[in-house]
Image (cartoon, rainbow, N blue to C red; front, side, top):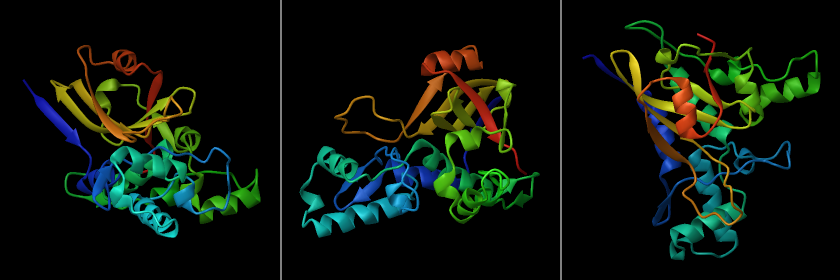
Length: 245
């Protein structure tokens, strides 16, 4: 029997850990979900759902100082609520992009060679001929303008049709293009996918939600196909991979 375990690069895993276990004063919480529903443009990325974990932590501490609030006196749920009330968190595409930046920073092209790929310079967001102003803004602030729809565009990614070829760093994208899960670990037996672990920032279904925020989940497969995975995830998904090398 041939077993194979595929994982993300160490630096990409560190990004996951930074959102999964955010240390704020004497508490550790998972980063809340937040998205820029009002489509505010030109704001700080920490208020747009696109910031690195450390920027979110720093802003939480800064706001608490302005409000004369001792975060160390809050419970984990109260701290989570504090961050949600102040629009501090990450959206699903922002989370995926921060992780994928590290996946492709040292992308393997052969057994002993890697290639540094800056995905923020490679991803195509707005065509110049359609909207020159938005094109220039997207070039200056690419991370803030990358959505699930942009990642799923044929100019930036391609569909993985052979399920046995999936690998960490592949994107499981909801068919309505409103959510993205990132594959972070794949376990195979005799080339057949048996386990998939994915990481994502889900939008809370209920209004009063107190965590855990971002999380990782593992799905065990018997048939090892996309239909089984979608059924167990209770979602309609396609799997895509960024297409620049």
